[in-house]
Image 1 (tube, helix red, strand yellow):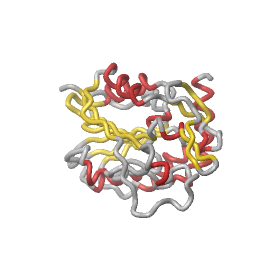
Image 2 (cartoon, rainbow, N blue to C red):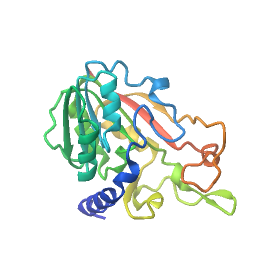
Image 3 (spheres, rainbow, N blue to C red):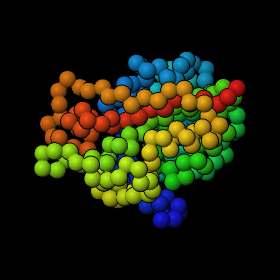
Image 4 (tube, rainbow, N blue to C red):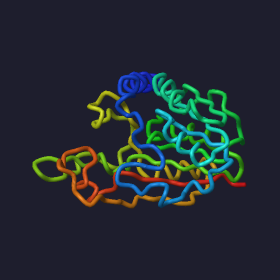
Length: 249
């Protein structure tokens, strides 16, 4: 499947679904059944920092960064509707806000060696070219800057709930683009092993500081074990992983 085809499919899918994801999976949350930033403190002191959100969605993570004292708020997203919504969400910010409609594989005019913090909350896995995207992120960061991202754990969608039990129904080791079951096969994501994310970060010049796939379960289980994110599945495999990396100073 060509990159242009993947982008067109995913842009169309997100334009239709944007309202459904308004404010979902945004900082201080990192993702389903994961510890949040209040506990993990991966971003450090945000006050006075220039920050970039890769896959900014409805702008709620940038809103959180603004509430923590960030000096400049920058974001990019693939879809028109998300960028327009983010502009509305961030309209009352008292600091510089710069938003771009762009694939993450392309630089829409972002400065190099500029940002103290780049982050991506449940968005990086949409890239069709991980190395190109991470190279961009590395270029955006100041020496000594940090990159934090979360994404669905690549083992999570390998399990399906069938006849009251979880079954491994897809290969974990076979990588490549595939229609996403959670989206009823209307969009395309690229399955990658966890080690692929780690090794590509290293290849792009990052230093890995922390890899987290701990599970934090609620007190009550999901009513429906077949839900995409259920506590029953989370008891077996993590739903989310988080990586913190840095650019050498």
